[in-house]
Length: 340
Ligand code: TXA
Ligand code: MG
Image 1: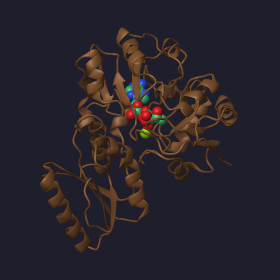
Image 2: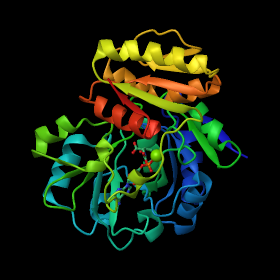
Image 3: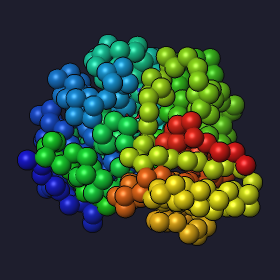
Image 4: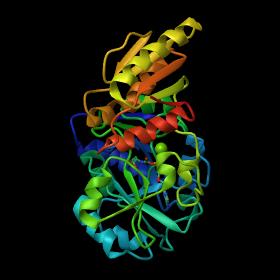
């Protein structure tokens, strides 16, 4: 049985205590963060963490982010906390930034996916923060989707993937940012971006100077040892995804041509774009990269639900949150990216 807790109106202490107790007992609890919903459990409880991998169908070598409610945990979870980590945490926590640091002894190997590093973040969503505080321990939480599916930005998405299979879902309504946290590796000489996300790279560079970008971020195949998450199929709806990127006017034209070509083949075609297009189903991505970030995963799930065979997506400008949106779209599209 899955208990659904309504937290749409914000923090309700009495209800959150129920969810916190479940976390302490090593049960699985899905909760809203400012980025996407997380599927959490006690990060230090090996058996509990193993259950997360099982329920998600997640490969064992893809480590989990450990969520904390106070900065002291940095020193308890990491063997070494560089100055840069403290600077970034002071500036951006709570918020959509995950820091990868050398792991301390206490972090179970399952949680780390076998790596000798640990990823830590303090989420900004008041419900998440209070829940972790009440649980009185770090909470390991991947995005609350079945491995490979689009990340959940609404409790209904979590229900879709996990109802009946986890102890509790805390419903906080739609998540405000819509793409996952930015993952930054601080174990090397220079900060290394492993995953663009809810905190734009430009903001980080304003504080710590130039950041290296892992080649896999832009979709180049490479040695993925640093962040195993990058090598797996991701964010995929059931339908095939075709991403069209390039010059705005040409993209719009190419999308219309594609819709016609595909429909002639008898396929049901969905379009997700910043401008209206005719298609069997249309999803409005928004008028800015921020809106696109909020909508992108919901759009993929919604077009899937409407039963389309193919989803044609308009690329967005790769600035600010646009970098994260394009990263997720390229992964969803696999090799089907058209440059015009
Ligand atoms: O916004 C978010 O980050 C959400 C919410 C729930 O906090 N969580 C999330 O978790 O997106 P997940 O598991 O879906 O993605 C975690 C990413 C993966 O790409 C994983 O490979 C990477 O972080 N990661 C985790 N631990 C790591 C580590 N020690 N070294 C390198 N990458 C790590
Ligand atoms: Mg995920």
